[in-house]
Amino acid sequence: MSQNTPPGSGGPVNTPAAPFEAGYVVAYNPVPMAHAVAQLASRLWQSALWFVLGLALWGGLWWWQREKWGMPWVLIVLVALGAVRLLVTLVRLLQARRNLGRISQGPALESGRSGLRLHTLEGAVLDLDWDDVKALRVAGLKLAAGPELVVEARQGKVWSVPLSFLDALPGTIDGGVRATSAGRHGLDLSGLDRIF
Image (spheres, rainbow, N blue to C red):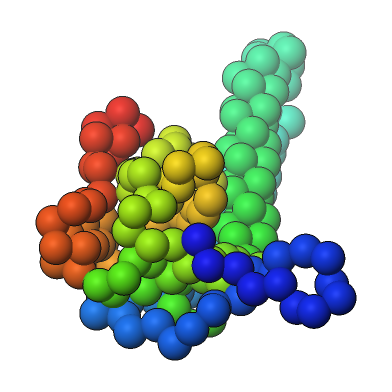
């Protein structure tokens, strides 16, 4: 891993040591997450509208027939189910908006003959030689932003980013990494089998 130490700073800084010649680049892409935010916002408004209309209809029907029906158990259950659905959609929307705000601009992963250049969501840049790379794999659950692309070095996990933040599919990333590393490394896709 290439890290520069500025004179008098006392520690490494995550900046590229030399120009990097990338043969394959995966960039950050906010469009899929922005689409998810728009869909969830639309679903929230539709659910809220149907919830209010259903509550008014069933509430009015119960009020009209309250002598025959007694306690409105069906109405209470329907209101509870509708409220839970609204709450779940709201939580998912807030999470998607937070994830959209985390997505950076520019390249996320650059792969070249010498190794990898990794750009974190916070803006730091890490360079890894191919000899330092232990594994590239897909890990995580299909929750929130979804499974992550993880790069592990000899000292452990050094970089990860959700696949939904990137402009390339896992198979395409695998092919690009295999081509630029001369077949020494590829993306372990077995993690995708475990998330579904």
